[in-house]
Length: 401
Image (cartoon, rainbow, N blue to C red; front, side, top):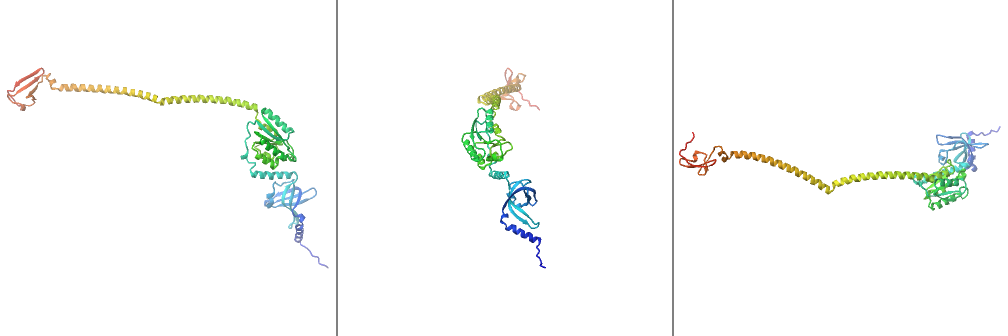
């Protein structure tokens, strides 16, 4: 009996893996299908199944390739997966090792949009620091849009209703299809040199493909480089294009853009009249305040003037002079009274005054006689009394014991 060679499971799986590896058609292959059983593992790997109406294929994207994924993979998405088909030896299953995943059909457009949006954002084209203020009053408004259709008619009617004096300059542009982006860019550049106060760039609603021209990089850069402030008004409120991000102001619809660009002239005139009256009242109040202030300053200045100061000094000098005169008169009166008192006292003590009271003034040899030591018997003395002099001779001198 011939002995048959038996292979182990791992040997078979390894052999099959080698076949897959050597098959060039299974390396770097694009496969499209619908995503199901999508799981994000804690390790960073993504496990999912790619299926169509008849079959399915196990797939895995390792964490190292996830930086190439520009969207969140989820159930039901139609995608195109670039990768390599090989065998996972442990389980004996073949699967697709995904290197890159793209959205299929309309999804590809979204993916391109997100990639371009990310690149332009990193350049700073969407930064608020470059946004310019839309003028409050626009005398001239440029419009880049299709020359026919409801959108342009709505913008014209709203503009003239809100401000009959506004001048509108329409640049008829292609807004979809071949040549649309070039036409829009040319319209922006043309109106940028036409002296407009603001430019409206937009169109009515449509599918993503219809609106795609406003996502083109050339259009976005033309809006960014434009010196005139731009309002982007593409589609409906739910439609958001890259032109909306780069424009100075985004309007949800073309009609709303006309509302934003045009001031309501009647309300403006009414507000202007109110402001004028308010300004007049403030001016009158300010003038009255300044008059009062000037009057006060004038009074203060007059009091500080040399003439006023001189008058003040003269009056003060007169007051002090009068006070000094009164003081001097009081002092003179006081001194006079003292002098009279002293005079009376002095007069009472004068020798001649005492003669009236029975006293006499005796001299010997014209010298006052005050002691017996000054004379002797036989000397002549002179006795002065109140009404004359008496000559006498001393006959006897007696000294008191």
